Length: 251
Image (cartoon, rainbow, N blue to C red; front, side, top):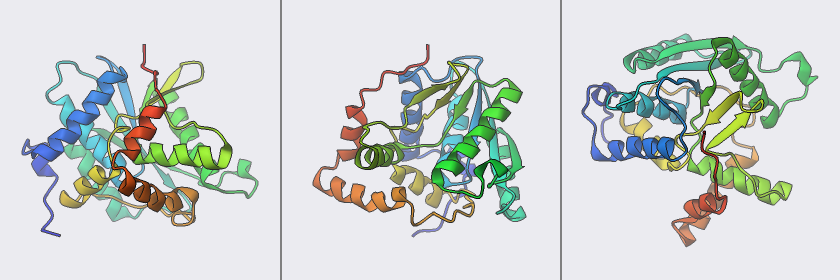
């Protein structure tokens, strides 16, 4: 791979066409589903991985030329049992500062007492979402943006179809607590390969929190299967997305 570029080049406006297409794709999805309106406050859920950092970049750069304005802040959960290294925290803080996004790192237990010693991907995800909801509620924020992309949706669809007999998936917009809060996914039509390229080319300060199920969970095992399906039909991901017939725009 050629020498990595500095993400500050993007912040300063030197944006190549392929990155611009990515940003415009995010904007198209936001507009299509009415995700964010003028005056809204959005809390970005940051995992530290390439996807949430790519979404932060797209949202920040997009705000520079939008005719409407909304506020954007970011929250990263740092598990006490597997803390993020201090050096990685500093790189993340510098990144979000360059993007002019208020960034908070909040420590929390990965294995709360309510788990009764049990642990799996579902419980971990539920715990993370609970913390996000609690913090959003404390701040009075109704919109939580997550960095899920098209590949995430496809894998979730196949997991539910093959193992739960339910053709359901994550949605571009999901409401919770009778509409009190919404999760929005502006990258839901973006291929994972785009965020991977962005992270590699511009050396985004990614950090990978410890996950005991990282390479053995069902999602990881489905990735090569999705790849094989796409060798048969390059639009497999898009077909699965369109099969859901989403109609969930925020009103």
